[in-house]
Structure formats: C-alpha cells, structure tokens
Length: 157
Image (cartoon, rainbow, N blue to C red):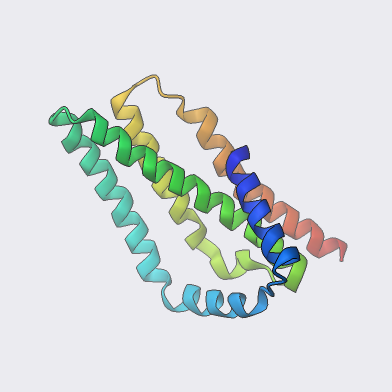
C-alpha cells in the first residue's frame, strides 16, 4: 500500500507544484463522465470481476497456473493502484478546488475494490494460504480514511 500511495502522492505533487496543473477542468470532465456513464462503468467493472473469476477457474482446471497468477496479480495491482489513486485524488481535489469528489463518485468507488477482491479470490484459488485479509483490509480502509479526511477538512474550513 505504501508503494502505491507514494507513487500517487509524488505524481500529484509533481503535477501540482512543478507543472502547475489546475485540477478544475479535469473535475468538470470527471463529473460529466461519472454522471453520464455510471451504469456502464459499474456493469463493466462487475463483468470484468466475474470474467476474472471464471477465467481463474478455467485456468485452474487446465493447470495453467502461471497464466492464472499473472492475470490475477495484474488486476490485483491495477485495482490497488486505482483505489489508491481515487483516495488520494479526492483529498487533492478538496485541497485545491474545495469540491468533494466522493459525492460525485458515489458507488463507482467500489469498482476497483470489486476487481481487487476478484483478483484476490483468483490468487486464493491458486494458493489457499495466500494472505488476503492483511492486504485487502488496508485497501478497503484507504477510501474510508480519505472520506474521513475530506469530511474533517470540510468541517474545519
């Protein structure tokens, strides 16, 4: 979790302080996309998680464990990174534009967590001793901590 958090924070810091990028135009595009395409994003994420689990079962039955591990770890890292990106971006948007991204995002924030859970399940199918709980709890709590940080900054200002 620390690796993804450091990458996202450094990316935000470089874009904000070195390149002087304003986030407000990106927020308007994001708000428009999240309201117009929310059903497509939700159903696509659920479909991707379902396909990942089905492919894990198929690859396990064919004894293609290396492909099974590769795809599950790929989607696991992508899900972790996007979860961290959303959590840090919500804090960054609040600090720069005083807008609460969590209100616009809503249930769409669960899509990367859903894909991460599907990838964890695929890795658990390969190795029943895979440490799911310790990794999953950190990435499930990260959006909650981001919501609490945005709410506390909102009430303090």
